Length: 453
Image 1 (spheres, helix red, strand yellow):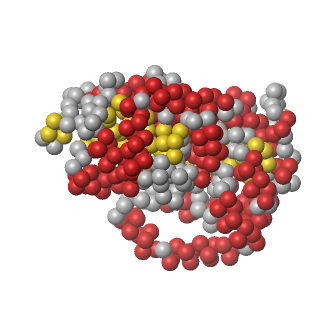
Image 2 (cartoon, rainbow, N blue to C red; image 1 turned 45 degrees about the vertical axis):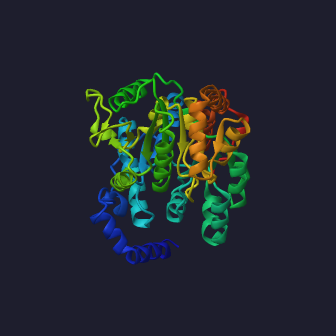
Image 3 (cartoon, rainbow, N blue to C red; image 1 turned 180 degrees about the vertical axis):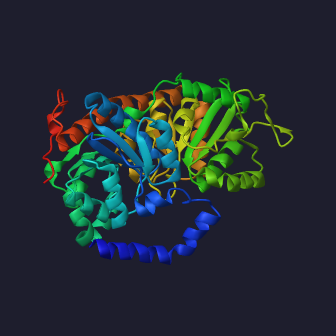
């Protein structure tokens, strides 16, 4: 099977080679980590400590590992932890957030790359954040008696149906999983229907609720508030953040702000695009529709405060053109919009703004966060908008009814508080799976699982 998969992967690479070459040459992507990705030349791990290999695809998954890694270090300090990521941004953030741990690019699912990485890392288990299943990875791990766990697991109905169409290939992958910590019962049931042993699936909740910041006076948010003041955004303003946005959502938020600011001069907009690489295209579009802007990268804590944009005295839209800051920018928001929810992406996390008590709206397509959205909507702690007109209406309501707006944010923060504890349940599941009996005092019996065969 590995040989067949290798040939399929190589064929796909040849087929898409013009596109891959264009990404490397023009977008400057996929240039780093060639040896690690294609040959499995990850760093050689020294020592004989038992090792857990955590894999997180990109920035979001890298960040959610924090509470789990912290609690693992407390409960089982004898375990060594290494962290891989697929994307360049994820790899950079992993190195920044976890400087005490070995970090590297994850090898692609070629058998030679996976086998070489196993020899160099020598893990007792691989812990996959949310869901990143590859046939060679799981099959070769099983042959080496390396447990494969999924934490913060989520599996949408659409994805579950897609997997079942190829059950001959993916069914064995699900059956080989040693343990799955699912975010909700709905997700847990889908894992089971796709082949997981029910005794190896637990409902832990979402780790993202544990890792979320709730104090607006934390050092990073205070530093960003200083940056915002240099862009003319202070405590007297009413600040609306559109975060993790796709291109059309950026423009939709900018056009809504352009209309709303005419009657509410205190209104300020901060755009945090999901992909900073397209900021150039965004600024060109904003120039076309007459929206003044300023890049966050042009501002330091010592910059002069100015509201002059392109020679005109006016409020400017602040565009955050970096990676990894959004979670703390939410701490200065009065209200906001969570992107990735108007198209087919399935939404981005609305948990981070909720932690700060920020009332938010989002589009109707939030399949990645179904249970979180249900809780927020059921508690009147968020609102769904379907187009630019409804986004404008929400923006205007928020600034015209600040007390109602703040009350919505308080309800959102309470939802976060009720969901804490997933990281502890996740750590308990991992330790039981890898056969580490030392630190199981006070664990949740409902999370007990059988060790993988």
